[in-house]
Image 1 (tube, rainbow, N blue to C red):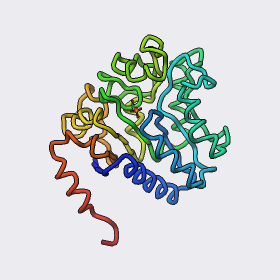
Image 2: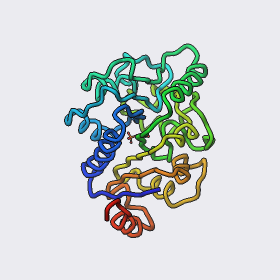
Image 3: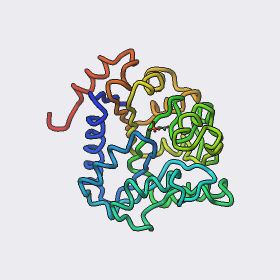
Length: 255
Ligand code: PGA
């Protein structure tokens, strides 16, 4: 796992954008897994501003609140359309987003796994991390081998989303989320984290043991995962200087 520490949030978005553009050049029909949350907003802004050629890209998302239809402005479906898919004029056939208003979320989860598989798997997966170490809505205790499924949200997550809703009581209790096993099958992973509130989860996922208590720690098993941080999110890393040294001296083709 690679740890990349940038000075500011804007710098980490620049770096994520650079990687995405590189992957897109390599494969114009990329299968791109999207995270919602606040953190990737700067990356999505850059994609829209740069008018990257993404008509052939197939888009997937990580998770959704059960009960919210795509028309609900608080749904991830709506947010991704607003931030990225609509400005880029992505054809509906290329947007494979989980829905929160399906009658049978368990069945929808199994069907989603098939859609991902039929697309040949995810080429590049963008991830955020929760203060509790979750990735997507795989809350602490999630099986590291889990697949897409309905998942109960923990209190910390409900509190974190209370701002989007009127209060923690109004945040849906359930989500439908790609599993950790599903996420680990992506060919390349970029996890983005910014701000001091993420520093502890980052320290534990990067420098602690692999444990279901910190679901993001499962990325230690992935052969091509990069964790892009700003200085605040990196502030609790014990081996911060080491990570910086490794990245500064990284083996680069042609050096
Ligand atoms: P955030 O969410 O980017 O809004 O902090 C990340 C997450 O909860 O996975």
